Structure formats: C-alpha cells, structure tokens
Length: 324
Image 1 (cartoon, rainbow, N blue to C red):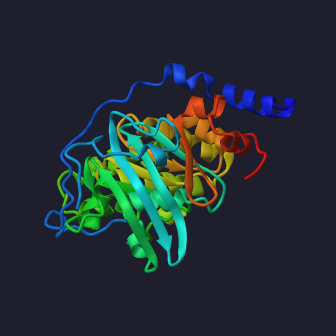
Image 2: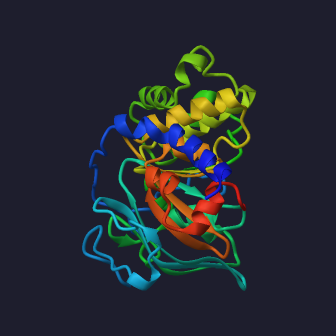
C-alpha cells in the first residue's frame, strides 16, 4: 500500500472514528406489515411520480456463493434482498444482490455512477414499476413479505417506505399544504395541524418557516425545499425513508443540515441513502454497501470496517480514489 493510499485511509478513519463510539444502539420497532391490494385500495401514492415468503424477518436463505464480502446478514433485518436482478430492457442493472438492511439505522449505498445503487434503492419501494422496460427477478422482503408478490399493492407499500429524491421537488402549494398533502390523501384528517408541525420539527425546518406556513414551498431555498420534502415524506409516519443523493445539489451549509437530520431520523426510522460522497457515508451511516461496475454488490459491512479495513481490493481501490 502506497503512502498516498495510507494517508487517504487515515483521513477517512479520522472522519468516522468518534461517531461509532457515541451512536445510540438501534431500537426495535417491528410491526405487522399490511401491504396487500385490499389494504391499499383507498390509498393514493404520495410520490411525485406516482410465491414465496419466509415466515419471519431474517429467515430467507442466502446462498454462500452469492454473498458479498463482509457481513450481509443481520439479525434485525427489515429489508432482505435475495438474488435480486433488475433489467432495463436487455441491460442488466443489478446482478444477484444479496443483503439485509437493519432497522432504525442509516445504511449507505456507495459506488461509481452506473453501478446500480439507485436502481436498488428504487426497487425497495417498487418505483421501478413506473419504468416500462424495467424487469425484476429474485426476491425482496419487507418484514418477511416478498414485496413483489402479486398480492402486494405498490401504493400501500409506499405508505410504509417513503422516498426523497435527488432534486428537491415541492408541490406548487403552501408549505403547510405540502406537508399535509399525504395525510389528506390517505384520509388521515385528524390533528393535521399538529402532525404537520411535528413533521416540520423533525425535519429541522419549523424554526425557519413557522411564521410563513401559508407561503409557497417554491419560495424556499434549495436546502429548505429538500427538508420540506423530507417533512412531507415522514408526515405519514413511514417505517423506512429512502434518500437518493439528497444533498448532491446543495451547498456545504445545507448539506451539513441534511446530514444532521439523517442521523436524527435514524433514531425513529430506517434510512437508506445513496451517496457519491464517501466522507458523507463515513460520517452518517452505520452500514455501507459498496456497488461496483456490472451491478454487483461487492462488499457490505459496518461502515467503520468498510473504510478502515475493507476485505476487497477493489473496494479499497475505490475508496482510496484509484478508480471511480
């Protein structure tokens, strides 16, 4: 290992060193998952785009030959991928993905452009269903239920698994109505004002907008708009929040606020975040999955292990900037 490579690893170690000593342990919050077509008949997707199952979480088998390096199995898995393949037409975007995502923590997905990390993220709440040429093979379990079973309603699934996109996309409505939108669509009309206030508070935005809730969400700054979108996503109280590079278009100050918010959200929600920023992954995540070319998940482990002592030479080369 060259002196330059050692220096890069040392800097990453410094970034992640203290947070793993102080991070709160994950708190269990498993609940019955109701995603059948019958359960979702009256619901409307809040996103802007709008049979085999194990008996319990953690029971799905993972072939030893298809496991990535690291520790892809966890005891408190809320999401389990087994031999997951995703195709766009004839192009394979994901190749036999096997991994477990634990409850109430931050799991970061990193890797070079085009490696499939955003495709995997969109698979978790079936956003790929909205792409005509997309095809999914294999299994993806949420609380032990295969979300690609025929009796699973994608709309009901998205009530449990919310998503925040790379570019802030507030609706052309007031700040209040942006956050209240999902509550009203889902018929959760009780205590709307209180729930909106709580969501804005959790999104670390209430102090900045409390006196202008009737103003348009489009009038906010980029960072405020992204936090508004996060408030909208958590107002309906999902279990999982997916984030696709939520800070990539923001300045350093706004990015820092988003990172602080992600860590706070992980005390109540399971957060899965795609990022190109390895320092960001080191700062805020508990687990890190490294996707590399060809749609392969090469290594998945505790974040400190990935950045301090990766098992794969390819992962070490990526982390130290030799490629990607």
